[in-house]
Length: 301
Ligand code: AMP
Image 1: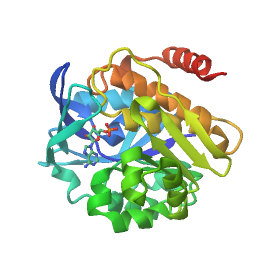
Image 2 (image 1 turned 60 degrees about the vertical axis):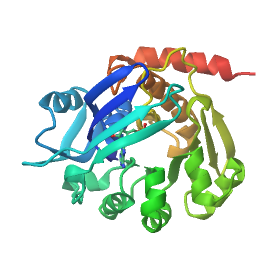
Image 3 (image 1 turned 180 degrees about the vertical axis):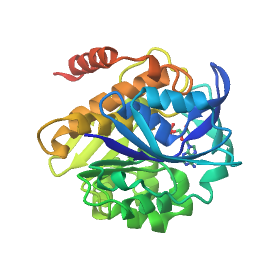
């Protein structure tokens, strides 16, 4: 089955200790859609200006990412994010964000998308995530991702959204901020009480933690010798996870969450090995399978 992905389609200018690269293809939806496309057809919902390079549109299309839901605004400027990483690559600063066409955007889904079974509300303003959920008819599984910015400036909308999704994905710092609880395990319980049946906490190079009706599950991150640019790793993780789930022919969506997290972690590992999406798009399904097998061996005891 296919995956509907909504989020930012951006131009990213990124500086890391390994170099600087301007105006790369980026954005939460771009990373998530490319990651999901390893496993399932993808319908992308986003907005760009006419400064968005045609070669990036071609890249999406070449990967089976459908663009009927990607609005192009004449004379508009594409969302642009400029970020800089410290030497350890775990800490980053946003140097500048230009909202451009995102600022006044309200997504309108093409009619055929309203019945989308698997939906990823990638990181974007919670008001936009609501507008997408409003247009859906009985999806099978909806995952929402978010970031600290929305906890600061749109908490009310975010809390309302949590009652409308099956799974929330956030990082450990955001989980602490949302619950005012320093303990990640008890924070998980508090988040369930806010709505989502499943909660996944991302812990970067230390993997991720799933909580749901069957208890906890720990997914390792793929151990990398060299990280070039971690931008989009979280989006790749969640895109790979939902793409994998959508590709399974039988069983309930939730029964594929654990293996989905491992596949998401592997796609995220490729993302970290190059700037923007450069390394991700070179990976093959065989490369992914190889790393999944390695992770299986690493985590068995
Ligand atoms: P990640 O490294 O997984 O947290 O995601 C990084 C991506 O998020 C970059 O490609 C940015 O374009 C995008 N991004 C940065 N700021 C925002 C924002 N305020 N809302 C949505 N996406 C953003």
